View 1 (tube, rainbow, N blue to C red):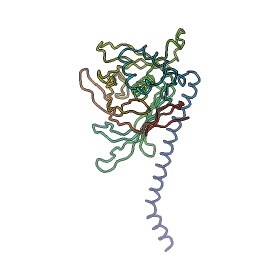
View 2: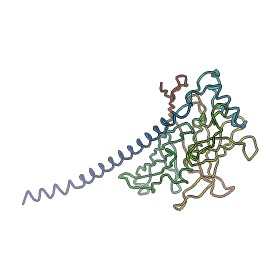
View 3: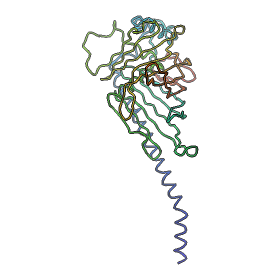
View 4: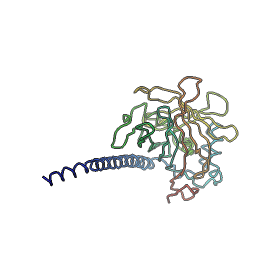
Amino acid sequence: FFLTKTTMFLALISTPYILIGAAASAVTLTYFSWCKGIHNLRLKLSAQETDNRREDNEDNITAGDLRRRIKQLPDVVQKYIKAVSHDVEKLADEEIVPFARSLRMEQEGELLLNGQFIDFAATEEFRTRYKHAGFVWDAVRKTQCIPNLVAMPVHVCVAYVNGAGMAKAQLPMGIPVMVAQSNTPMLNQSELMRWAAEATLFPLALMPPNINIENTDHNMSAEETALKWLPSEEGDGNSAILELKHHTTTARLFFHFNSDTHLVTSIHGTRPKLIGGKYVMTNWGCFLSDYERHGGLRVPTKTEVGWQLEDDAPFEIYFKGKNRRFIYLTNNPKHPRDADHEHVE
């Protein structure tokens, strides 16, 4: 009888610890499963870039070739490329341009959720050639499960890999916060637009092919990629239109440039927005500032993004981000280095 009572007592007092241990194990396993999923996406991103590098010659573009490409652009875009690639302008015509093939960076900032801005921290990896555009954004943010008492981390992933967009978010133990979505035409378009806007972080990716070098006489297939700049419909001399076709998806964005610095200040377009479970084409804006020199290029380190829900209404900002620790990877030994820059021989 005494042993039975003792056993029951020990079982009673140990039950909470067993439950806590089981919950902790479940959270840990879920976290590792999330990390494995992100790792697999990055592997697909790298494989996509490796496969396509055999099909182009971007690693061997000379400074002379680049200057000829620049002359094909609208005047305002020419000024922009020259302003952000000052180090490249110093190269002799026969020298190889250090085109980065990828970028990894850290990001921190605030996301709007239920009317409140919530802190987040993220890492983002890009493929920086428009022919194989892609990115994986992996973020963690805190959300209040019980107001002012309990905050839990929410893992968020947004990606564009092999022409397919993806978005998902979950709490610890794998509890979904939003329905995971992937590879729908509207989502693909939305994430390709995001890549094109974030290409200001690796602006040489916004250079179209040199029509004097590459064969453009053939008819483009449905799967082929193309990038081109067009004069702005606004006719103000400080804006231009970027059109990017990747796989079967097309992105069209309006770039606005500062008339003095020639740097991109904002990017606008009509982007799919998820409203009530359906995508609705909505005015979207990306606002860039605080330019710094990284990897030999001038790139924005501050980004704010918002929706314009009604014509002539102000943009409702839902994202505020600060970019840091830029790591550019290139095959060219002459690629500039700085404190936040790494180079692969």
